[in-house]
Structure formats: structure tokens, C-alpha cells
Image 1: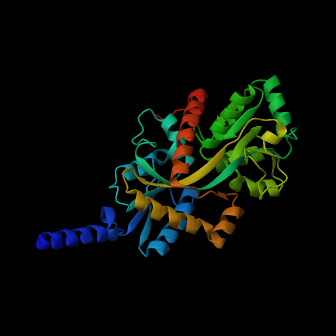
Image 2: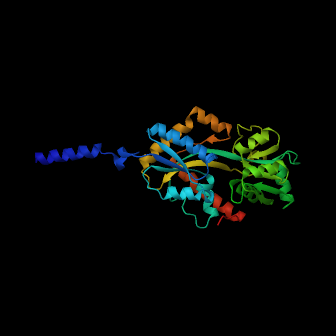
Image 3: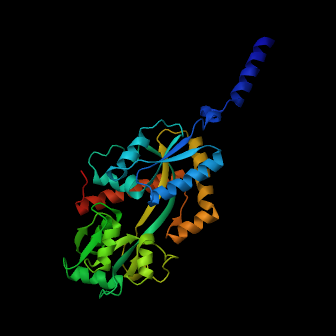
Length: 322
């Protein structure tokens, strides 16, 4: 009997000391952060901030891999199919996590089923801009004109299905107006034609538009945010002028579905610590980004709402990338 008791005691001690889900072995190799866009953009910048934060916190090598294609779908699908062991992560935008599910009838990943959310890291509002010589002095004036004169205004966008295109579509739906869409191949050429007066208005992420607004080459009429932006404190929010429109573009991090919760929590801790660094906060603020750094559960709940919202917006816009 005593021998059996000793064996049971040793077994119990082993079970107490044993790390759950092989936690002691993680990370056992370099961690990859896949950014599904070329180097230099917002997702790439946030991905590299996360690489440093996770590397510093976990004392592991973290590499950023830019794997672009199909509006971010190629890189996202690669993460969705990766082993759920905490060694492959995705840092991507609202388009990849929310908008693509409405744009593609055969998306190679399911944003709600194939990922374990870690955190929405940053967000930024869109800003409605018009040419410097536009007759419209406020967003309210432009909206009222659009409602009374359907089809007489045109708006530029970075392309069909882009967040700025769909923001304009939400505006049209919410206020009952109509304007003609002029899609461009990217936000930069669209803004150049706004400056040149070739289109009446567009929505842009705050950061890229701010230098042109501050230099007087474009005029900002309203923000799609719940509160004024530090970068442009004099620009009113849409809600404050009676326009029902709130939209943010955001960047987030996720792992493959099935990644152990304890690993997700460690990655979340590293992400929050990284985004809280003073130099990171200052850099993000200078580009119009707000730090979010919410919890995995908050990201999960938010993602469900965003996917549903943008599916409706895409359907009503008629946009498709198939």
C-alpha cells in the first residue's frame, strides 16, 4: 500500500509541475508575423512594432514576412492554414478582417472562424476632404446639396471595395443621397485629383490626408469619428453636424484558430506593452492613429459587428473583387 501511495504522490507532483499544453516549449522557434501587404504601409508599420514588442517580451526572434496579393487574402489565408502553435501571426487591416468577406464570394479564409483574435491595436477615423476652392464650407452643406441634387456630385476613392469607397456608400445610405463614384488605383492618385478639382469629395484615412489639409491644398469638412482628432482639432465630427456616420479604419493582430488561450494571453500582454511605449504612442499620434490595444474578447465581439456591417455596405454598393 505504501508503495502505491508513493507512486501516486510522485504522479501528482508530476502533474502539478507539468506545463499545460506544452507551454514550457513555447516559443520553440522564431515567430513569424505575416503582413498581407507590401512593406511601407500601415499594416507593415504596425507589424514591425509588434515584432519588436513580442521579441523583447518573449526573448525570441520575430520576423515580419510581407505576403501580399488579392487585397490581403493571400497572406491571411496562409496564417489561417498555419499550425495553431503560436509561431505564426497575422497583422492586418479592416479590409482583411472585415471587408473582404463581403467583396469575395469565395474567400480562402473565414475571418470569424479561422483566427484567434489577439487585439485591435490602432484605429484612425476617415476625413471627408474637398478641393481647396470647393464651394462647400461644411459637411452639412455638401450632404444637403447631395440629397437635393442626386448624381451632380462625384466622389473619388482608392478603389472599389476600399474602406474610403464604402464609407461614402454608408454616407449615401444613411442620409438618402447619391453621388457618382470615381474609383482610382490607390489613395494617392485619388487625393491628387481632389487637389486638382477633378472630383468633388472623398474620404481618406486621417494620416495621409492631414499634410494636404494643413498646407491648404485640400479642405477637411468632417471626421467619421466619435470625437475630434488631436491631429485636426478644428474639424468637426459627422455626428456633431447632424450627419449619422461613424467609421474607423483599424489594424489588428490574430493567430490561427485553435491557438491555446494561454499563448494568446501572452501575446496580448506583449502587444499591449508594445503599444504603450512612449515612442510608439507619439509616432502613432503623429500619423492620426489612436491606440486601442483591446482584449481578445473585445476584439472578437467587435469583429462580429464589423463583418456584419461591411457585408451590408458592400452589398448595397455593388462592389465585388471576384
